[in-house]
Length: 604
Image 1 (cartoon, rainbow, N blue to C red):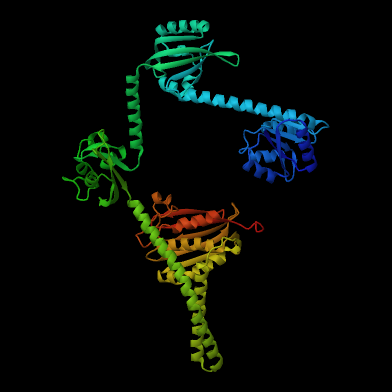
Image 2: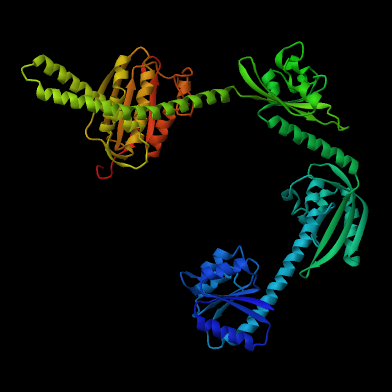
């Protein structure tokens, strides 16, 4: 029974196809799908021997549908049926692996049963051939013997399995294309030539002993079998090589394996070593040796506590002692020479399955611990920001009450009471100032929705400065502004305000004794971009540190005074706005950060 899926949106054609298939007398079972979605559902749920696919389907062509489901029905033959012949469509169909291209002419339904049967037979033969080739390829590649496929005339190597590449000591590219005679000495070539002459007559020949030379010049003693095989009317020679120098070969493999293991051992960035029960070093990687200021060869045989930690006896909390005693992994965290170390010890079985050795794995986590502390500090700052927002909301209500009371008093107190009116005016000014601070704080704490709008960057600068105006005065920092108007850009105002605030805070921290911060905005005549400059008179940044200033958590400030995130966040925000930040600095003269942002299109 041949199960057929017909993908056809015309029910009449589907009905006629069903009738014609029944009349043929063949064992056909037809399942009809009206649209691509139904067809997709069917091929996921059922198995079909062949698919009859209409080219013109609702919402897509038959080839589009075929491309979407090819991974599901990759081995199923497809017959593409179309109402009109089209060479371009036919070429595209053949490229997609369609078995046949059928035009809906007057008698195509009569021919359809024959086409279906022959296509299924063809697909079955191809499937059997593919399986046969796969079986042969598997046998070829998994063979424990070295197998070569040779040209019967030139004796050139056409193909070599993995074992052959190992025997000849090279890659496929070093073997394939060369003659087998290239791997023989002159004395052995005569023996091999005679065997090739005999195999033409007998189709099989053996050489009991042949010395071959691999691509590295090493010799191998081998037993050789030659078989002539007819492949697609072309004679090829299958050459099987059995290495009879197994002991030598195994020794070479062990040496190679040891070299690979040592290379892997030395490539590990952490400190790795192997100690015996007497704390003597058996193996050590290069990274460990470098840390000790020595070479691996000189460390082997020394006591680990002496070589690593300059001690005369084992460490009090040594993890090796616990590992040997309880035969399980042990871990400690310790400090040595101002470094924080994580040390693991794991049992390592010997030849008798006893735990004769232990692997000691040391990781220097000083920098990681510092980053963890900075991350905790940044989380604290984020929490403070959330609390500040709540406090600002709570302060707004009493300020409104004070302002209402002040307004009431100003209305009922006679204007002749100048002293009282002056004091009420002072209250009004300070209430407005407090409200401005609260508004700036709320605006800064508000969650950023990443939406961009036409914004005057001068306004963002003014509101940002208002947020920390008191702190700047307290630190005796003079703000010198030179703002060109207007400087309009399509930005997310909260994000840019955050970036500006981080740059101002960075400048403020760079002037611990006070100083001057110059802020300039202008449109550059050359690049036609907005430039916002923050130039301080602070301590400056050393040249070797400039390349790290935008790296997250990088800071030269003490713990508690900086998280190492401010400049990174500012740079990320500006980059997200298709801008950039440049920096110039001179020690003891100051630093200038320049934020460069694109202008609004209509401003350009």
